[in-house]
Length: 208
Image (cartoon, rainbow, N blue to C red; front, top):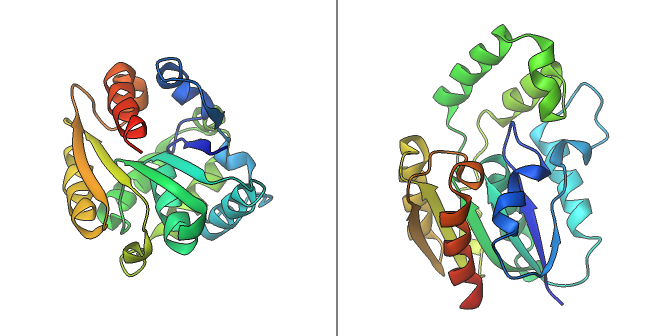
């Protein structure tokens, strides 16, 4: 039986999918806490996170339906491009195939000004978050995306202007992909518009 894996974004945790999952037909599901996967101490990098995610995925023998938001979408896209035979379908919400370096620099500056206690709910320390963001500068999956062969749904909140163009561009590159906007949603569509997001997901999964 196929398994669905839900991948949260930066600043979220597994619970961010709860409202979406309650509105979908049940399936074998798992929502990992991404930052608990690598054993990296204070030095958390994208490579360490991705390698830990790959090890997590390899523990399942069945085909995987990956759904990720933001950072989770990057990890899902990376895995589907490197291991296309393991992925049955792909949903990418607010994805970026290339690191938005200007945005990363701005976020980095804002995070440096925040107190340590503000990062506890994210499941990682301030040092780990800053290390992760620094390691993503220059990340580019553009040469890999053509290897993705599964049905793919690209989604973006209608108010998420930062990521909409990237999602549309990526949908044009992937061989079996389509793009949809999520009404009344910003970047964190799984929290801001769970009903609308679940409706789009249910339609996609029913058509597989």
